[in-house]
Length: 388
Image 1 (spheres, one colour):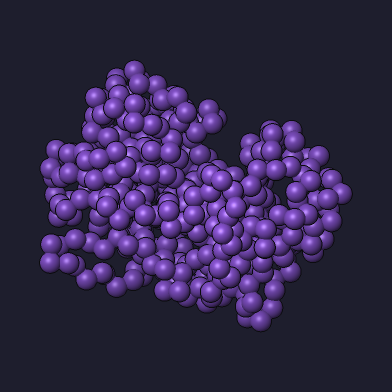
Image 2: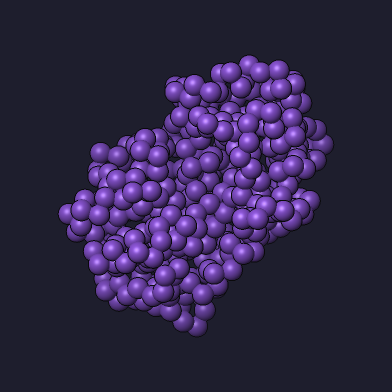
């Protein structure tokens, strides 16, 4: 495929039409207790990182160039007053983590609200956002409790574990009494989701570790959560699985890559994702450049269908419909003249993707599904062999 732009037909991954690859991965992530170790056994991981004198395992993610990605144009500086550029989002993580040897407890974790000492390896974990849920599951832990992000249940791609996880309110309003009743030995969340007063209440229940923010920092969050869980070796296997898959896909994707736009239709707005977010990180790992309006060092722009012509004019559009078939706004937008006029729509280069994976997954488990799905859109076999 090198030298050509894939002019494929639309793939549909929404609602009941979810692709086989995505549905199959949901079963795999939900049914496997020791995901990290089993995944490593089924793949050919990168060379084991050289241990430091303290015996630490290197959980630093590889840069896009190290993954074989062609360089993408630099992101423009955002003019939005509340923009959080990538460098600003990443900066706090330089001080996070632990000095304990891998898997050894007790350990003290430095995080967004100070330091937390964890006396023993956690077994009863409560997670308050989808990134923490994804990280726990892919590291082989079924949380005893999880908060719903939008009061709509847990993500479909971990559906087979949902009967073992008690809901503890929503991310916006966690149920403290329900969390207390579960007797957790670790609670995971982030500073962006919950302020210091909520952190204090949670810390009275169990040791609590907060990342700075979800999304753009999903790789840094994964490292922090793996250290809190004492599962550094498993985490390195997971990272190898993702990074080896990305390297493999980067050798097969077309060159030059198509410019790519991300469009999420919500019930009340149309959100256009820029560079500083979960999916933006994956597209950069795959060397997929963004159209000009989305090639900005910021999270997203919330607009309407009137903004489609400017923000969704890439050669390829990744479309996510929040709520799937229950989203009453989507049919009208997708039948509108402005949608039909988009270059990607006219050339049938729209990848319809499950919103809870491509937008809401914010973890390595969902990232692997994204990588495989993008590869399949370009007519390629899955590059990450997830465990059965």
